Length: 426
Image (cartoon, rainbow, N blue to C red):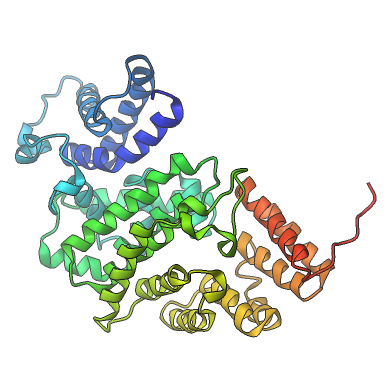
């Protein structure tokens, strides 16, 4: 295939490995980024004419390295090039350029790149933001949405992080075992992987094929971290959480591209292989008796995965787990998610009382108004619900999210929970 959708997907999937190799070679984030972008432009011109390469990542690394060297020479003008050993790790450069991530150890280019971006000299928020930009190639707008902040604020955050990496003279080497463990103890590495996954997962059906590599890349990075830190229960929890969520991907959209609510999904479409792997990791992590936020979230996902039907879901236990998560990681979004379980266990009025104080902090959050509207509809407060739904639709990032609101209303009407709102004159 040589269509633009495939090319875009292939470039996105190859980016971490290509960027890691180019950074190893040039030892400068901006130079590596420029070289990769030049290689991408050449791919867009070359691949439709000549067909896709056998290994897109190796092609991008080779072309990017050549164009990057040309750019360095132009900038240097008549100045002599530095010695090879000043800009390149010869031992790595002589290794097979197409070596795959899953067959590599901790010196793998992607892991090196990941730890450079999550260097402890940077504040955690900057670590995550620059890693999402450099490792995964997410746009500033996408990263800002993940952090619930403005685009200009995120642009400044990323710029400051890159400048700080350059000014600090961060060594472009993979840290040793002790330093890796210290950095892993901080949340930045795991959070970066989780946000990559969420960016791929939070999409509409039309974008899903192109965005799937983000989910797959996050799972692959989590598995790599798990191989490096085999006794770390939070990495087990993270990997389990990603697997259990991604297992539902085939059932998340219907044939018309509309979102299918969890209770309405065809559970026979869920990936049993991923679920089994995820459940085994959850059980293994919990045996360590060192609970953490990712383990708790994975345990919640496991309860959904273990329920053969929606009616068998243990919402009481999910409520308790969200309560534990609130204590570990206080967040308005966590409370919002807990309210869904509270609505199932104690009714919509209790859930509505729980989320009302969150209004100011989540004033720009689509899911807050979607849930609020749904709860109000269940309580028969149609006019208030309509206001909340209108706000949710205005904040929707995709057509699928807007359609999700309408589907929620239709479902409540179908179940007889509310009466159909009166039609307005046109």
